[in-house]
Image (cartoon, rainbow, N blue to C red; front, side, top):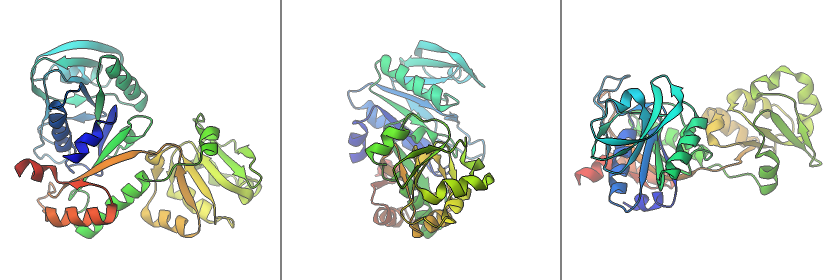
Length: 341
């Protein structure tokens, strides 16, 4: 599979889903199996819980996670004790999760596990660095429901996106919704000057006026922006670039759209995982002349598709893959079809 060779270029990979039951765990198993046949050291962990035999939301059967001999894995104390394999413990974290401390272990036999990794991205970064110190060439991170945070380029260098009928049972809607996610992932990076100015800022909003002068708006969050009319008049009327360190929502884009100088306006965010907007508001913002750029761009390697939903809806996989490839310009695979072929 071509995208496996692409994965080997990176030291960390996130697998995230557009929705639950889009085949993310199946994708993880496929990748772990493929990497097991390469001469590299692999580590795996998760944000949230994964690997259950029964989905806790839909009560449907789920594929379990298979760990191969010599692979490193990180999971909670509770789920480490439930592992069906023999392993050597490499480390037990000082930090605790709701399911206990995190256990880093190296599999001595092949077997099944439940993954429940770090509860936040800061700890996940620490775990990835730790895995590297234990000799892992790559850490694969399994994302959780509705959380794209593991795909942030500050966490993982590359990502795989899993989509499918659970996201939408209508091919046209599924393609449109997946295309919008890919469009956000593919946002272009800001120029070097902006990256230098904003890369170390973790809180607040900043703008650059027509003269290139940087202004701290003294606002901690974009959620507070519309509450101060004086800010709108004093800064945004002359602002051509706005940096938001936190999340961006429809409310902010609608606020910016109301300004008279929207044409040529650039909104900068840290990465695509900070954007929580609807396609309608996003496209309206673009049509008025605005654009969004990121400080750090994510490398999307491929898209996997699951044509079957938990409710029993089934789309024709060949048609779905063809239409997705035509509209997204990314490699698209039905991994179950590959396994059966």
